[in-house]
Length: 153
Image (cartoon, rainbow, N blue to C red; front, side, top):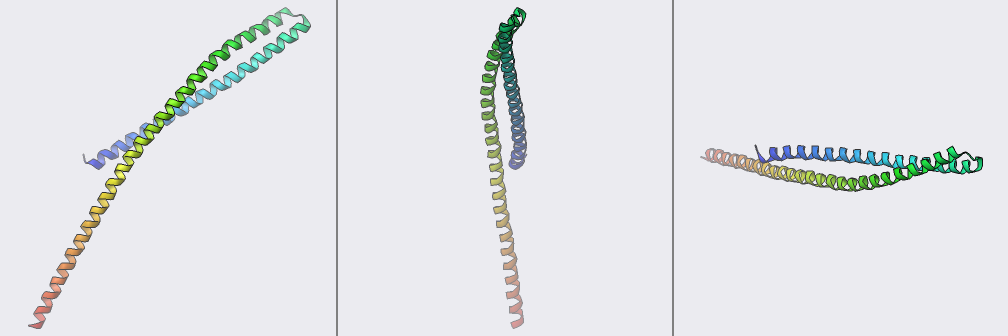
């Protein structure tokens, strides 16, 4: 396999790796968004629990009071767990972004090498074409000189 075809195949692999890294990053960003929405919902649930506790103080309903306290306690634990998971997700996203950038750099390096090979091929082709034109011109000059000598004799 020639160097250019090997690099072309490597470029295809690098592009696929970059696309895969992009998909994984997008998935992680989606998961982070879901965690943040869950935390907002949990905070709203906690707020409703506090409202229930306050309302039960006025009405004297102990079951509402206990339910409100349990709601506050449960959402507090949920918020703690979600905060930890969000922190982990954010650090994972940072790592995934760095990985994506590394894949992008690898792809661009291969593209640069291929562009360099193409440029060298173009230079070689131009030199070959120029040499062929020079040879043709030299032959034409020799034939013209040869024909001119024969006409003078």
